[in-house]
Image 1: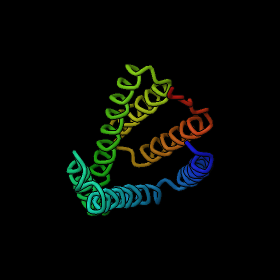
Image 2: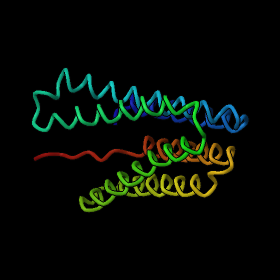
Image 3: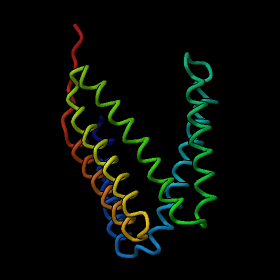
Length: 177
């Protein structure tokens, strides 16, 4: 990771921590803001993958995966934007499902990094466990509207702290002889 990338990662994580603390102060409004944020980010990531497919990946081996991921993320973002004014329990389940997928992917990445003796497997495992814990707690307290907001904000703070730790860690330099 370059020095500028490290600085931007730390600044982004600091903004995420600040935003989470602000959202914890107003849980009634925060629920709608979190839903809008999740829908917006999924849509943006979907568009980003689709643009990458159109400009680069269609000529690559396995490039259709970028098209598939882009379409799925765009569809999930569009669907989440339609759920914003619906029942909050449905939206909590939807956000919990997204975090469950993230947790499973982090744990799969952990297994691969551990096999390769990569020292970053510990951070991936911590993120996976944190996301899985967030899913379980959101589903346990699904009837209370403000508690999932607090859980989501604490999870965001936790992930931001892990991003700062990852950005401050030295990168191993591999010399090829």
